Image (cartoon, rainbow, N blue to C red; front, side):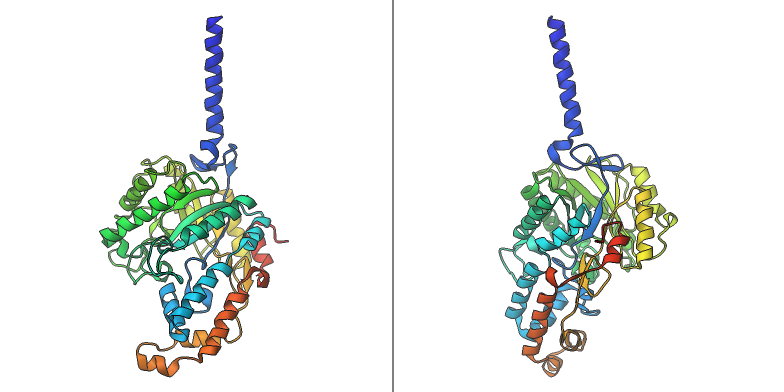
Length: 412
């Protein structure tokens, strides 16, 4: 009888262990070889979009080419209407650009994941988007987490703009060079901010994972291979900081040169919940053009995910999505929303935008004489800025049905 009791207890323990493995870390998405696995044991294939331009404004989404990073845009707006009204613009922009209605629309298409690009300054006391202290990063992300939880979406947190700049171009709001890799102070802040975020969200199952940095080390620099060698050590350092407070979440690592190159990575066993993320715009949509991603995925036996793609014809996008589905590469298109086209939900630039805002921002502002000579009428500038804030609201957007269909999502 005693032996039977022991055997029964052992069976219960085995069943409990199997159930625990099947249920994946108490509700978190996890990594199982080259797949992501949901808490119920089912495979998760990422399909979704990026909430770009919201917490990391970019020039081209304002119709600007030369004035193409946040600090440049903010400077131009401040010169038109003053720094206080510029701060007010950004505060309303954060309220209007993405709302629950936008997330509900995304969920209704059948998407399962959104990637949220953000600037690290949202979690510091640095001047950013209308605030200079007590930044509202957690308040904003908490809100998005709540919407995603309600709507059944997973959320990837993407530090698009790192301390010092990790890319060296407009997309990271930097000063033309990836100073992050040259500055110990910036690297320490990078790790501290990620640890702060991880501590806050350590038990939040709606968050799929933390993407440490977007598109590190652009291809422009003669010393890019030297910089490339600094990428994996910094990733390891940040992962270590995160694991001190959070063992639950997947950590996403992007390759250098626009998330396109992975040859600098030599160790993918230092953590048991990492995956890699690639980006690709343009070129061929056929498998052969993506073999470096597929071969790296197969070598590491870890998931590979296309964090950004798009800005192409519907035919190209549909072919690419089929290729990615066939080769087990999940994807989130860039971006969800922008003026005019090439997104899931588009809006119109307001009247006066090009003739007032774009004309001034893209013109000569190199000295005070130029500023005084070219500054537009403040009332007209305010009207144009207010129009942008109104037009970007969900109710004023137009779904891009063929674009959505090309992503393999429901367009009606």
